[in-house]
Amino acid sequence: MDVAAPGVDIYSTWPNRGYQFLSGTSMASPLVAGACAFLLGRHPEMGAPQLRSRLLSTADRLPWLAGRIA
Image (cartoon, helix red, strand yellow):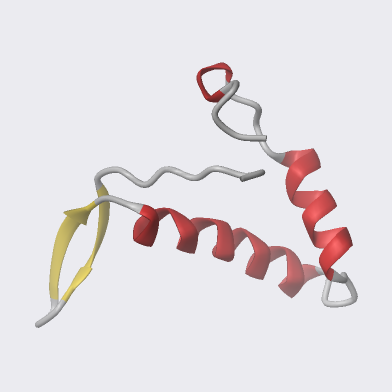
């Protein structure tokens, strides 16, 4: 894993027009996908290698994640 996103207590939609706090990779992965979509919306010419490079070069390196992600 190269990029991590919060996946605990994310306020999200729920069936029947509801909202609920949810946790897990199902909550974290859309945040990373959203970052990719944002970058590609601004720079549609980017290929996968450029997108990956931009994400990694602009991500905050958090000390508490040291040793947990590559």
